[in-house]
Amino acid sequence: MARICQLTGKKPQSGYRVSHSNRHTKRKFIPNIQKKRFFIPEENRWITLRVSTAAMRTINKKGIYAYLQELRKKGVKI
Image 1 (tube, rainbow, N blue to C red):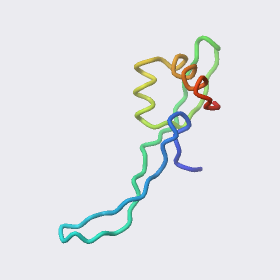
Image 2: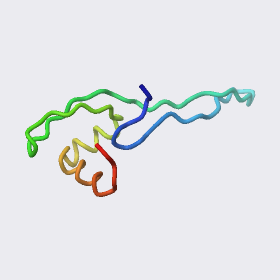
Image 3: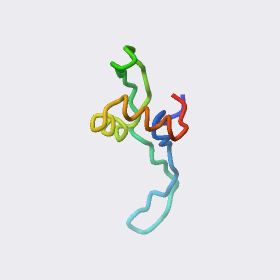
């Protein structure tokens, strides 16, 4: 499975590891993706998503149903 957040679309980025002598070597910045089950009381069902921890914080702040409605308006399929 790809390390992509299903809600925010975050995925690995490439960059450089820079040493003290300023040598550059390739590296990857990997997002913190977690597998999490959410209960949606308005739909009376559970969903399992692979989400970043940043998306989890947004869900805790806004609520899962409001966040999903916001994403559906933007055109994200869930």
